[in-house]
Amino acid sequence: MNRKENPAGAGKTGAPDMHDDRLCRAREEINRVDREMAALFCRRMEAVAQVAAYKSRHGLPILDAAREEEVVRRNAAEVAGEMQGYYTEFLRDTMKISRDYQRRLTQGMHVAFSGVAGAFAAIAAGKIFPGATRVPYGDFRAAYDAAVEGECDVAVLPIENSTAGEVGAVLDMMFSGPLYVNGVYDLSVTHHLLGIPGSRPEGVREVISHPQALMQCAPYIRAHGYATREFENTAAAALYVAEKLDPTVAAIASEETAALYGLEILDKNIHTSNLNTTRFAVLARAAARPAEGGDRHSILMFTVRNEAGSLAQAINIIGRYGFNMRCLRSRPMKELLWQYYFYVEAEGDLSGETGRRMQEEMASCCDRVRVYGSFRYPAELH
Image (tube, rainbow, N blue to C red; front, side):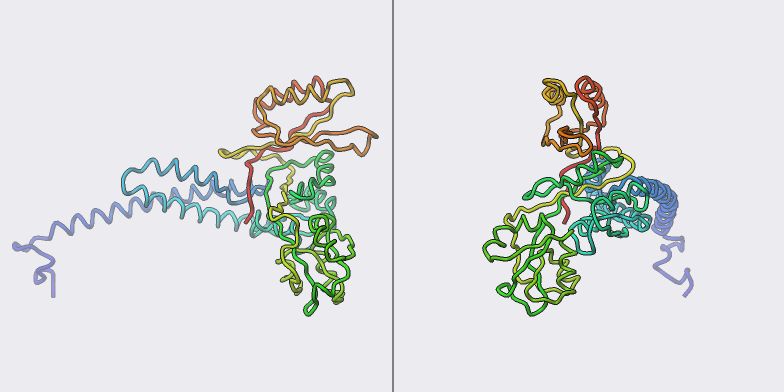
């Protein structure tokens, strides 16, 4: 049937239906907008690639949830009425595509950690940098130096546990080394008693793990009368148990480690506190710009002059500039007997103009002052 014979294609006079013209114009407009959007999409992804390169250099994670929410909130406000919900969905889909592209671009990123596969540092590194290559090192120093020398892009190392306290060896390296802290992330730590298949808790005589894990599970260990032996990390202890095949020896480590090395969980959650959390720092060769929005924290380390009241002056200067200190610790300086440096975590951006003025004033009572990083905190890993 040709068009003249088709009632749906023509009016009573045989002229084209005007609805067809409007449909064609609408489709032409969609095609024109799609071409413009394709060009804009390419421009956006070029900018995304630059963001990915910056994050890779500075050891920043791909996902910045607070930043994304701020972008969605700000841009969605440009669209009124019922279209706002659809536009919000469009923005979230676009950001997911951007994250996927960034992950592909940063797959060549290498992240150093201390321990072996299954260590809590490895778990943290995988959550912060999904898709990156995690490189194990035998100890904190080796992992730190790998980032310094460029063998790896960044190092992920623990700085504090909610039960066992600070990780002094890492703080000391931070103080004396060149790396910056571009993020601090909280990882909830659950300790389990791991043994070879067929073993039982009552048959265990010795428990092995990292010193802090042993400390965090000390009441459980005492209650069962286990002997203890320290290992460089929890995953290495689990690997030893798997290889030794001795039912009287068990490790304290994570559920992920048990699955990795074919061990059974003999007893779950044997740590003292259910709020057991380890804070991991991302250490990089260059300092990142502080992320917009959210609660910002900074890490500052300094030494004071050997004069009466110097420490009090330094603390007063920090407070006078409006920075609330969340913690203040002293650590002995390895190269100078009975000399100490001070570690401060403060709320706010110490790398900004106000922070720079504060550091200049602290020079009147301090021999050394350095900001090691400003970042959004808290950031919990799931």
